[in-house]
Length: 200
Image (cartoon, rainbow, N blue to C red):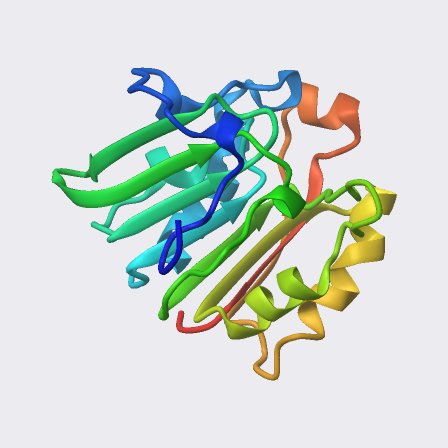
């Protein structure tokens, strides 16, 4: 689909309503309530954006944490249950959870839009790199960019620099978080860094 929404592969389309879609498929290290703090912070940061794009999010998509009434929300993750709806928070919204790799989806969000990457850990797909020029262009043009990553995750450490380099503005929010959850700690993901660029 052209225009303001993502164009997804055929296998990601045609999903029917799913009562549990907004809750996501909780991964073991995201099962505790404390893990949702990142989504709460991100939802606050994007509350003025009419269009929200999240890359990742299968374990805990931002959709169910949004408090405003966006015109569109697109979440892309190969492990997310496919879902489509035409309302969110009691208002019209083009809502899609697309089960696909980022590199398989053509994104063309209108402005102003927010780009959300919580649990940054992008992987390459075929010959296409994890941090593609298209993704960097999206990050640079986003009205709001929110990134959260585990400090000990080597993959994220290798990606955060390229993403933040797309911004000429200083982050409006720059938080070091320690989430004292046993599952997150066991996974080595309890020490985190959250950045939000754009209007506070």
